[in-house]
Length: 451
Image (cartoon, rainbow, N blue to C red; front, side, top):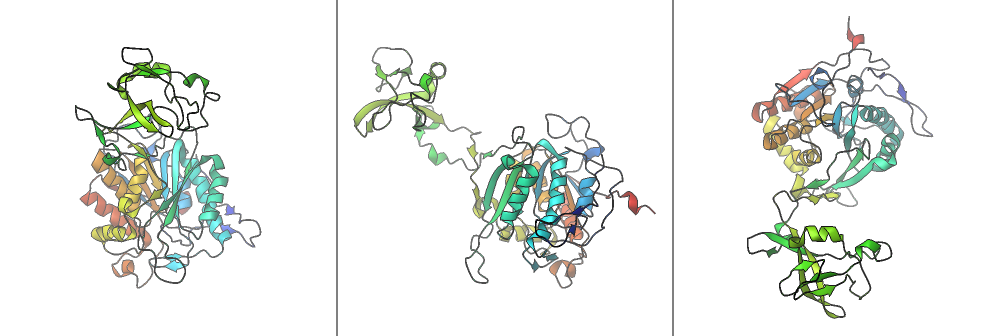
């Protein structure tokens, strides 16, 4: 299937003019004039040349000889038109922020309507190439976050909204200018389909062993959680089947649904003595008695016998990701600059840290097909290679960037990198040389370019 890419994008209500949807746009804040008003009627393409044989609703069959990083130079809207529908598992993009700042390229679209008109067709196309199990992560700052969230609601649907994550990329805060010292940006996260999305917003990294202070005689660490439901919305009226007595011995700690020698009857109650309910059903208590313990507690009305769940610490223990990601966890702009400098030099002023992208990657299967059509300095491809090298995954990243010239006098231009695409290309080649996984550049097939 080939999608036409030359249609003009409508601006928001009240805008005085339309912005051409075919304008080439680069990543991490830049845009360039590109081919306009043409149809992408050339061959469509996918990873490995075909979408046939996909397994488990994500990823591809074993990728023998397939590179981890593939790069396409050209207009990202044209590139999206050449992708097969539902061929991508994860879209991770860092579009221009419309701040008016420039370094390797310009980052200025002027009015919000013009910026939105640039973004709308690209997000619509991104939705089209995402699998129903997939998700999109979009980086943005305060300048356009409100407008972008409304646009994503429009394109993906409000119910597909998953999170607005605060990303602490500048712990010290920006000290230039007046006002507050801004220390954060945002990630807006949406599912392609809120029911089928396989995104897992949990991690092993934030599990703190100190939260499990108790140890059994055989060395297993755990904590004790009340077996009763502490939420008063759940009570004998709303959850009738979970209000029943159990039997426990506060000396031995044994718990059972049936009486035994030395046991006392224990019913679930709130701290004020009003009736409560258990979190576990009777069959589950019978199945897992070793995960429960009975003991005496000092309650608001005096001592009472209660039942607790032993919540175990295991190597694969996971914890829900918070919606504030700290620089100490995912890296900062400073660490991102250092990473890029180690690869190709100081050729990009505000790249993203690979730790941020790797956390995004951790939310999806390790065989995900990843698309970054605002590829900028190539952070996403770098992160994919690092993740695969660490966990043995078979992720593949398709990075797209335009050939917009770098600004004369910039570090990139001085280093001989004539276009923003040259920065992406140089980094991904350096990643292949140092981390591994291979690198391949593919042409942007456009039939109208044929002479």
